[in-house]
Length: 232
Image (tube, rainbow, N blue to C red; front, top):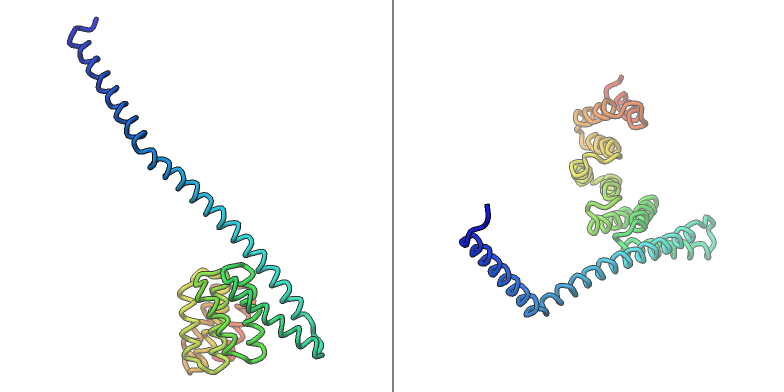
């Protein structure tokens, strides 16, 4: 069917409407060129910031790793000369610098565990706890947050602050239910229960470890402690 005059008029109206819309759009873009330019500049700035962040992060990791290496080298001396004592002191200072100055890096995680263990080993439990808590304050879900939390609990346990130890172990068990080192926390918590005369709860935890982690060192430890508690 050939178009009628009304049909031709309709097409003409649609064409004029389209042209008018196109002109309005062109006018809007031209009239707001500053907005368009601003948006373009904004995208460039965002890209630059993101790229800069990754460069900065890489540099942070590199610097922290270098300091950690130096700290490990200084702490490697095992003699008792005055020179070696000074090197040990410098190693501790470098570990502190990594742990506090580069707190979100992988090197800081390792430095935290090294420094905390160092203080714990020599019986400076308050200092060890400060190291672990400092890491947790900056990295509540960090790569060694669970280990740091267990470190806090261990310092309380070693100071016979059993209520605080129990609270800390329980808190991190609840917070990290899928942590691979969870059975270690169960064993620590059970030992704390024994100290405060809650043997039944300790027995339940030891049984939980033997059932949930068969053929492991944790199972053997739990079974050994169970035998001492129940005589079998």
